Each structure stands twice: as C-alpha cells, then as structure tokens.
Image 1 (cartoon, rainbow, N blue to C red):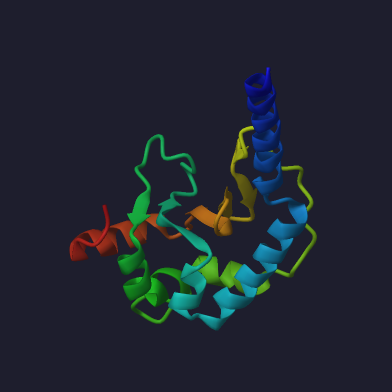
Image 2: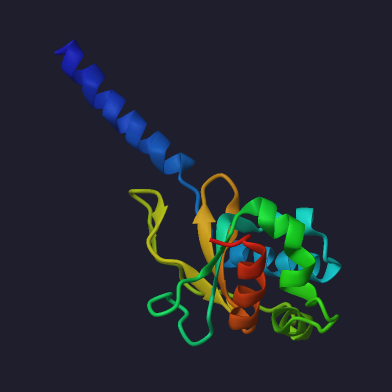
Length: 167
C-alpha cells in the first residue's frame, strides 16, 4: 500500500512540476520581443540581432511564403553574420533593402494575439506572424524569428548563388 501511495504521489508531484516549469510566450512577451527586435534591427549589429533568430533562418519569396513553388533561401548563422548588412540593410550598390526600409517605418505596438499553445505538452502549436516575420517560441530562448518574407528574394538568391553561400 505504501508503495502505491508513493507512486501516486510521485505522479502528482511530477505533473505539478512539469506544469510549473512550462512557461510559454504570450502576447505580452511577443510584444516585448518585437519592440526589442525593431530597436536592435535599426542598430544594425549582426551579433546582437542574431540573438533574435532561430538558425538556420529561412527567407521566403513574397509570392510563395510557404515555400511550395520556390525553395526558401536558408541561412546558417555564419552566413547570416558574415553577410548581414548586404542581406538586411543595403545591397552591394548601396540601395537600402526593402525589409530594412519597412523596419524603419514600423512603430512599436501592442500585439496581443492568443497564441496556439499546448500547455500539457508544453509546446507551441503554430508559429505567429508579425509583419514580414514568423516567430516561434523556444523554451530556452523565448520568441525567435524562424523565417521572413523577403521582398528582394529573387535578387538575393541570384546574388548569393553566385557566391555559393546559400543552400
């Protein structure tokens, strides 16, 4: 009988502990991340902004944001860091990248979307789109950009295929 009570108590304790350790990103934490993401993006420091990305990060064509017809550009962290300025700020001719122009126009704002989250399994059920960016929740790092819709997709793909730096 003691053994059975110990086993039952262990399951109850483990279940309560699992629920206590299961934290997830709500609209408030996404808002904080988004506002920090905008601020750091404008600074243009690759190492700092890389903390907001889940690698490898995917860049999708605006005409195929799910990668069905056109394969996304996949950037590993080292390629992201090395080429950050030419991918996210200005191209080789000095022209500002559209994504950077859009970030400059953005204002911080409230984002209170109810996120699809499985509390029992402690996992996010769906990604969350904010502007051109898709965020996912990481238990250890919080909200991270998993992918983005990239207006200059075709130009970037052509430019980087020549350098053989994308997958």
